Image 1 (cartoon, one colour):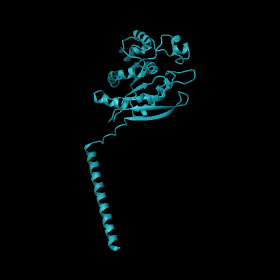
Image 2 (cartoon, helix red, strand yellow; image 1 turned 120 degrees about the vertical axis):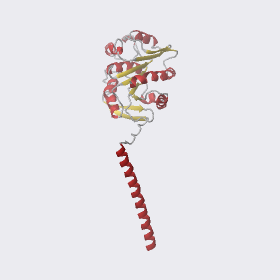
Image 3 (tube, one colour; image 1 turned 30 degrees about the horizontal axis):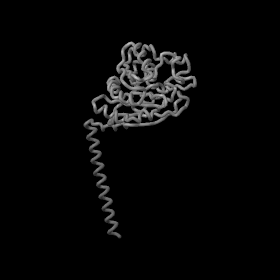
Length: 280
C-alpha cells in the first residue's frame, strides 16, 4: 500500500509539473505576443444565422429573420435586404442556396456583403388600415437589430421580387439616397392606377396614392436595376415605370415569366451589379 501511495504521489507531481510547464510556456507566448503588438485574429462570423422578434410595427406578430454571409468574414459587412413576394417568407428567400452564392461571389473577386431576409406577410411592405406596417418593421425594427448582429447598416441595398420588388423601390426611396446604396427590383408588382391594382395590394385609391413609387425624386440619386420577363403580366406597367425614371436603370427585359426560373436566371448578374455599389 505504501509503495502504491508513493507511486501515485510521483504521478501526481509529474502531472502538476507538466501542467506548470505548459502554463509557463503559454504565459511566455502571450507575453511575447503582447510585446510584439500582435492581436489574436477575431473569430469569423457564422455564414448563416436565424432569429425572430415580436414586431410592434406588424401588430405584435412574431417575425423571423435570417442573415447569410460569405465564409471567413470578421468585419462588419453591409447588407442587402431581400424582400419576398406575396405568399413567401424569409425562409423561402434563403432556401435557394444564398450561402453558396455568397461564397461563389467572393471567390469570383467581388467584395463581400451579407444578405438579410425577413418575414413581411402579404401587406405589400407598407402601412395598412389594419395597423400592420411591414415597411416600418424593416426600417425601424430590422435595421437597428442588424447593427446589433454586427452588420454595417450605414448603407444598405434592397432586392425584391414581385411584391418585394415594389417594396424594394418603396423602402429604398424612404430610407433615402444617403443610406440606400442600390435598389434591384425584379418583376416588380407595379400598377399604373389604383383601379388596376390586384385585390389586397392596397386599401383603396388613397392608400395607393400615399404609397406610390411613381415620380419619386429620390430615384434621381439612387442606382436602380430593374429586371422583368417579356411574358410577365407586369411587363407593360414596368416599361411605363422605367420610362418615367429620371435616369434609365440597369437591367432590362429578357425572355421569361413571373416565376422562380426567371428570377434565378437573373440573380448572378444582379449580384454582380449590386456588390460594388453596396461596398463603395
